[in-house]
Amino acid sequence: MLHALKAHSPARRLTLVTVATAATLLLTTVPAAAHVEVESDKAQALAEDVEIHFEAESESDTAGITQIRVVLPEGIAPAAVRYGEGPKGWKFTAAADGYTVKGPAVKIGENAEYSIVVQQLPDAKELAFKTLQTYGDGRVDRWIELDNSGENPAPVLELKAAAASSKPTGPSAGASASASPTPAAEETPASPSSQAAETEKDDDSGLSASAWTGIVAAILVVAAAVVVVVRRRNGAQQ
Image (cartoon, rainbow, N blue to C red):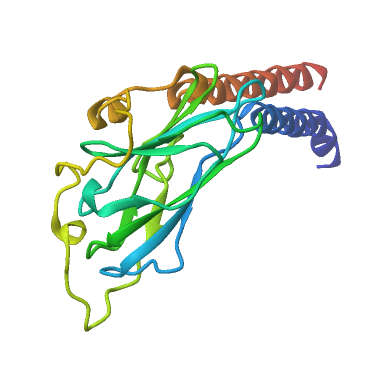
């Protein structure tokens, strides 16, 4: 029994080392989990005059954020949204399915924070704001996935249930997000449609899920091969 434990201990130690190395490799190669944060002090269904705050985290070491393009969730019409505050010099522009805030680039590595005010929130449990984040060098981070476990999740605002006395009062509570907007700035944004935002993928946003699956599979194959070789060597020495 003692001899068997000693014979297998090198294989066990090597297996542990291989697994530890694989874990270290994954932890050091996974890209930073930057994203867009959203919050509000009045996150409740059918609440009125709600200010919603956004913070777009920077992922670039070479360029500052210059533009945030948002596709509004169903139930909030662009006409029912107005600009709150944001980086110095930035302007708000309504679009057919949402809005854009843009201006001079913020400092490299600095997050872009801004807010909007919504006339009335829809009667929903949560609101997803698909976001395209553009940098001064043309890079675009697309936070548009509705699956929270995805690589590029859209910012989601969780809502409390509507108060018993609350009722829809304006277009934001019942109109589709594709309703015609009221012009809110001097310029017309040259931004992609919601369909393009859903389908396009950013080359700079990191490796795809399939790529990571391949890396993990390769590590597991190497670990298995090492165990087999060590076991054969130990068997030959007995």
